[in-house]
Length: 179
Image (cartoon, rainbow, N blue to C red):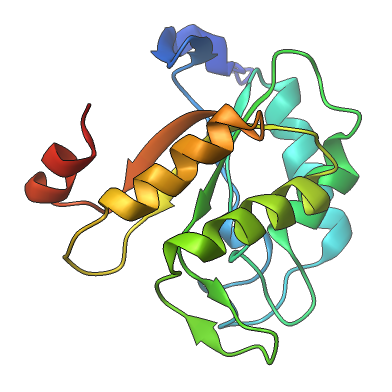
């Protein structure tokens, strides 16, 4: 019996802000290695690039990624750029800010609001884009997030991003971030 190939558009679409995307997207965290972040064994670069290209061939039109998805040898954002730039017009890239690395390479689980501009600019540079479609604030722990959301609102007003999302929030944080 021949195998049948299903494409991402077969699952239908949904709205991501004012963007229409296929329900099936692709998360890039494990493109860089066998375990999250800088743990595990780095993946083969050419295989990761081939996987990204195949995902788009199968109708994926939105990616979830972050600058903090990396291994000692690979950056998810660099892989995305190498595999897909120049980007298709309908490709939506959602990235995350909040966690990161300081200049010495030490893990920063929670950026201060004034550090978010640098994180957004790093995402732009690594992806080779002039704006980001969606930036999700990835929280670390519980506590106030209004100043962080406010910093992202300013970056949206500056044209660096289109939509703001939240990741790993509790109900109180969601209420705080809602207009």
